[in-house]
Image (tube, one colour):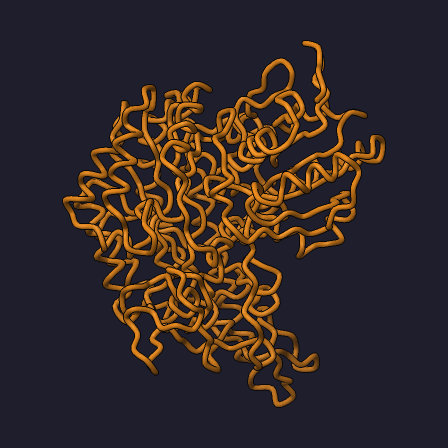
Length: 613
């Protein structure tokens, strides 16, 4: 459409991600660590060291961009008349060079634009300041809003955290957001963008519920961290995950290989698999298809110039449905030019209580019995360690329906995992949609009881010993310099001191809060309520429900969450259930004491590789 000279690009479409995702990370853990930080870390340290800026060419084109933006770019070039100079992925630093009267649309992507992501909010509960994901988003979009007033272009926002804009519509309006796009871009996105370019009306909120795998084209330039998308969706129904209600579909092998070659050509040699469950590649349901995965990995090994691949996500049940010989062979196929001793796999354990896990994610444990969940988690750690992988688990504090006994059981499971050389990351429950936020509020540090703190601090003490070795090994394989690796280790030691000091302070606060609650409970004028927040007002003020260690309590029977697992009807029993016996149900109280509709899934405008980082 528009031709330009060599001195200035004048693109009608400019695409940019938040600053924490526009960085020159070498490995996944660098990205995770960068997006977790708050403004208590000096900005110069963030910009220069923890999240150094992504590189651009002389015209402002980003040399790497999030996989989600690369898919948007590819879809626009494939499905519209726009040419390569008409759609430009850039960085926050270079954005000002590209904004002008020629711009018709600015597309912004972030996995956590307003600081509501589950992992990030957990950190924000303990450190002063504002999450950099939100801080830098506000800073850049104010710049975009000022340019919009001058030039009159449209602003569309998406990414894994697109749902967060619906939680803060006033913020979106103040920043000049015209459209919030939820879901994969390729189906509806190109038409929306062209309508904006041509001045036609567009909706303020677009939801694309499919995976759009059939429309997904190969990326044109390198992606952040070399993210290579294998699959989209998941379908296991976890209420705290935006991808949980969309059945998994897989990208063709040739598209995956093309993306790998594009990354290598762009100078990215350490890559990341983009999938909610790596071991399910090629499978029509939740049972892994070993031959399909093996065939893909064989083809991937033929791409020259790759150093190593980080797996990221997998499901406990997928690991258990593969035998040791198969897992050992997969591990061999993942050993490329730079072998790593810590090829980690992140699996969600969530809680030792399988019935609680099943109530919050009906398909997560299928085809196994929820009553066996704790032993299944331990067995998966054994399998991973035996076959050469490094097991990493996440647990969720404050799941709806959780009781103090659940927390104590999970602590016991964590101590068993400690003997398996596992790493365990605890996170606070955070709703992943407007609907679920209204029904099940977020869990915060103010809601923690002594059991929570013991569980949380135990996990971190394990991680203080093991994460530094994993981090060093991955950075080495990813080509990070010795100087930076050493500085990161020093910084890590200071973080350990800060965390331990924080645990001591929080322990005193919890003890004080419990003492105040006991004193208040002896006052006959107490007015009981339903607030989850901690603290104990004076007797004359009245107070909420006496302080409990678990904010959610226990109540009426929870309804199983509908999910498209293997295309089954929402109310069909899982394979391990019998008619009339729904082992996936768990007592969960509902706000106000009455049932409400299940929350609507919040798909994302991004590829799986953009999740978290």
